[in-house]
Length: 488
Image (cartoon, rainbow, N blue to C red):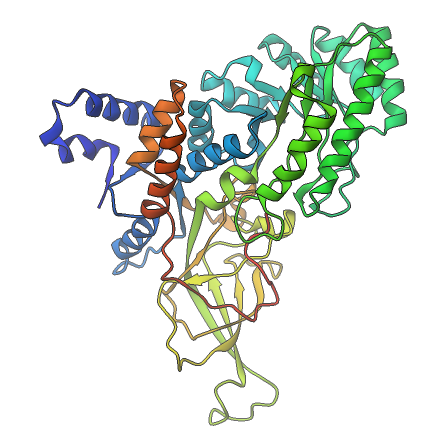
């Protein structure tokens, strides 16, 4: 059904003389390099098959630990989609969103750039031989020692939004290529960033003047409309504001050539604002304010766009409590006069930190289908720690489950594993990586610069058949107070 990398040669022994296959097998070994558990999906099998197989493996064991299935083929598919929908915009993946090395290595293989926020993220990206011109140190407030580290390791592009930051750069990295981050209207974003970062247009003039005095090179402008943007028009206004700052730069003798339009792009299909709708605003705005013949390079910092839908989390029920409602006086009362509390083996101090930090609303999916006459009970879902804050779902309706049953949470790739802790000694879930053969082969072709449109269409269709979730799972928390899956 699926094979770990060390098993692939044996499975395809009958085709061992194929040069293409030999190259393919070597590529798989080079890709994972024994750093992570990578499995290859045979045609006709899906990521759900992997998940169910892992669950079946432990069905007769008491060790039913939470785990992820990460479909790296979905990351490849997202990269194709990005290139098709925003062809002028080079993606610089926001490492902070999910710093899993398997994800970063996949994107590095595809030729993406990287938005790094710290020395540690720069170190990881450079360990994968990413060229310095594909790294932007996009943190406007940096520790001086880390600015010096970037200088020592050839990272030139970095953002700033204050005079103090200019002074630090002048001291620690005077040859840096700076990008002025301006404030954008993020009032309609899920996670607002302008409260912390971004210079006003008035302040931008002063910063340009001060940079000129210090002899610091400013090569462009960046902005961020907020994580989880819900209004595409904010991109158009921010691009117009960036044009204004570009023109200011000319007054001070700067020949800016880089526009960074930040992030805010959705990573799953259950959002109100779709990626294509955002692109339909960005593309004409770029044509209007930064036409192709202007020579301006355009980049962006997508994070959740690439990884949200690629990760699926399976958790196991470790405890259960039935609570009778105040109106219920005896066990003979209607069974619906009770609520059920389930305790699972991952929580808000682990993968579900996205509930606290990313304003996420999550809904469980069950592996077994609901019977038409099956009763539903008011339900809450809790994490494993001793903290009363560790609640995953406050209220929803579900059929009765038992200790040892599984729940699945989709779209769990963004701002989850990156911030998970081991509070109370609970370990982070293991991650199992999968990719279909068509996606793997396409990734290798893209690595060599071969990206024909017909291959894109065929590979995308194959991915939907081979690696996507099947429709058999029932979404059972229809009456949840949390009214969506993970916000993106």
